[in-house]
Each structure stands twice: as C-alpha cells, then as structure tokens.
Image (cartoon, rainbow over all chains, first blue to last red; front, side):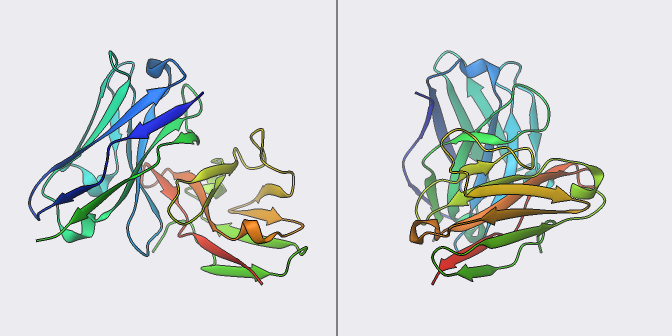
Length: 121
Length: 111
C-alpha cells in the first residue's frame, strides 16, 4: 500500500534549523520524485520544491533558495527536508508528497500525514 | 497574493451544485499547463480530486469534475453533501516564475 510516513512535530527557536523525514512504503522509492509543500496557519498550500531520488536533482522555490536542502537516502527509502535560519514565519505543517508520474510536470497522488514545525522563542 | 486566484469561500445547500474557479494567466493555465485539484480537511493532508484538468483518480466520486478553458479552470461538485465541507486548492505550473503554483484555496461550506 502506497504510504508516506513523516517524522514527528518539532519546536525550534528562531535562527535554528529543522530536518523533517518522509519514509516511503509500497513502491520503488527511486522511480518517483518527492515534493515538499507547507501550510502556515491561516494560509494556503505553498510549494517548496522537489527532489528526484534517482539522481538527487533538486528544484527549489526561489523563496527558499539558500535556506532549504532536500535530500534522499535510497537505501532506506527516505526523503529529508532541512530548513535553516528559521523565523516565526516558518511555523507551518510541512508535507511530503509523491510525484504521480515518473517525469515531467506533475501532480501528487500520495501525501505524508504532515509534520508541524513551530518556531518560537 | 497567489498566482492562481480562487474565491476565498463558496457555499451551497445539500444536493446543490457548486463550482470553484481558478483564474490564471498566459504564463500558467493560459499557456496550456495542466491544472490539478486537491481537497483538504482540517488537520489532514491534501488529497487529489482531479488531475490533468479533468481526470479523476480511482475512488473519487463522479460528483467531482474538472474543466479548463483559456486561462481558467473550474472544479464542479454536484449533489453536494455535508462531508464535502473542506478546503479546495488548484495547482499548476508557471513558466514566468519557473515554479509550481497553488491557488489561495477555497473554503466550501455546506449550508
């Protein structure tokens, strides 16, 4: 059964970094890209970027360039999102999602349950 | 301000039909890029309802349908049910920004 399982909630201080994991089940991890999306309180969905597990290629939203790192570990079928220099504006639920198609512009057919990241002093 | 514009809220009575619009421009929907739609209940992850403009994944009721014309797309929900009360998002790609974009989201209230 296709499933993405994310790590638990995090509380961080401003200026710190956070690393969220997303473990895949039920399919060959290397064949489909993983996208990260967040939703801040009272806001809509925001695309952060995506990574190809097969070759490590990434594409980040311009807003997060220089502050975000997406990686994967094919041996464990896990994707990671690291966000640095956190501010209160980064308080949000972070989701990983599987790109439904192997290549090209994509839609997301499976989502993780979400990880709440709270940034507070 | 989202690149794709959705109404903040729509409402309808049980059994009625509602539509949610997603208005873009010549650098996204109008350029021919596909539109996808997601449903999100409070405290849960989004779920795809329509992909590539008008296709429904297996398991999604045929009460949900998508269409696209020019620089806009729409999600129609017929036979409205109380369980349809959720947030709805459109999703596409913008070539000017070279970025995936989401609409701002629409909250559906079933009266």
